[in-house]
Amino acid sequence: MREIEVRQATADDWMELRAIRVAALTADPSAFGATLTEESGYDEARWRSWPESCGVFLATLDGEPVAIAGGKPDSDDVELISVWARPTLRGTGAGEAVVRAVIDWARGRRAGRITAWATEGNDRALRFYRRLGFIPTGRDDAHPHDPALRELEVALPLA
Image 1: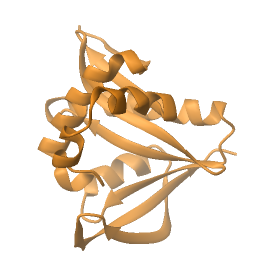
Image 2: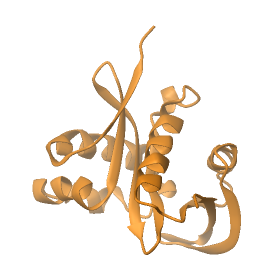
Image 3: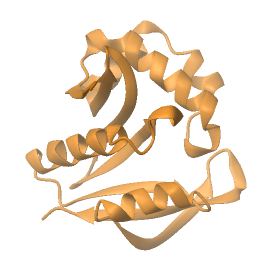
Image 4: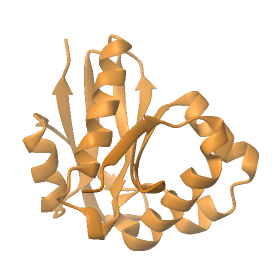
């Protein structure tokens, strides 16, 4: 049986980060605040800087990146960002593994909670977060690229 491995990304993983983000933005564009056009224009330096400013975790299978999640420090909290798993591997635990790695990373930073945003109607994402203990905060906002869509905030208390 093949095993999914999770590790914290470093600047040297920039090509893998770029590859999985391009795959994510291509497959599920409405799930993210960024666009494929934006991120396709990033240079190597920009990709290298990402894991230096955030806790970014990759799940790999046979050496290939299959899931990603990041934690972006936000005051006393951490915002969960860039959560995505390859569609063929959803339900295998890869996505949960990278999110749990971000949760552990946030606890190590003594964050009070982790927040995340999911597009209204993305029931799979909202169920996923609920299963991990996230609860709705009651906050919502317009999707950055489609004002007709709403994003809902969920949070996981850590303190």
